[in-house]
Length: 378
Image (cartoon, rainbow, N blue to C red; front, side, top):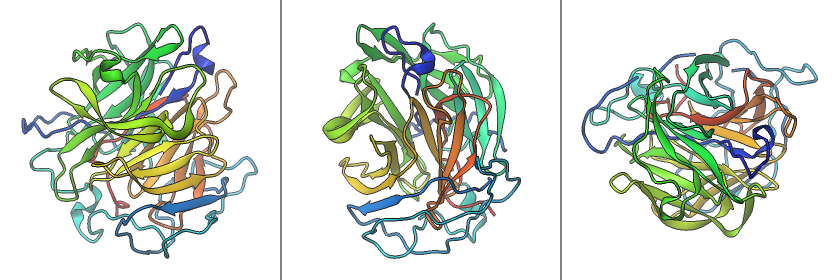
């Protein structure tokens, strides 16, 4: 997400990216468009895991399942992976992605989507640049590809983005109102970024100035999803963390408003959802964290501290193939900086590796639909 605070320049303003998957619970069967595009090198250390609930996880091999051309590299030129897990997890064994059985052909596309079909090109990560361009990021080959320039009916800068199963993204902009920023929402065709319309959302509706968001499938057996949001108050001073600093909610598509589920500790966080019904957030200061929320109650199921991976002024993340991909500024605070890509081997040894030290743009938003694989593709 990209934020402009008062008269501050866009290059130095904090940014929070969102992962959005559009809901298909209306049963309209609308099918609209995704592309298809790894690397390893450890750079980050210090993972601390706290489990606050039961997740049904099981241990599995710690082998990095990535394949293809290794594009990213560390500043020291090293290329070997390393387990960077530290701390004392409350569960034993390695994390295991609880998606579909990876021995079946359907394991790379999530649950049966006959009720809420996947549009073409809905299995890649989409990213939004700070100069209003839509790109794709393919974890299989660690490549970015330009889709095109946005033509949304707003003069404001972009703040966040999410992509739905139907091939459409929701893009949030940001406009300064004194010391507070408020964002509007627009619907974007990911296969034709010139096709962008205003659905009629009222900025700041129900007290939600800005929010990271994600559509999440109902369950491993029901791919139809609802949109969830994590609030940021839009005030100068960047992100914050503390008791009741933020709130998580679910989007009402009839009233076009977020409805609060519960307070959270995070003021400004990114969300991503999975095709088997899990909701995750990327937030927290001074130490960023990966948090799994209970969709019904907003309670934290699991919290993993990500040492040496701060949010920076522009950040985003996405779940893909059993792992998480984080987009953060390579040189935070330096005008013109681009974003790096960091992978958390969530279904393996929990190592953090910088897979791409400098992408071609500064990422202010990211989106991946629940059509993306929930386990490593064969």
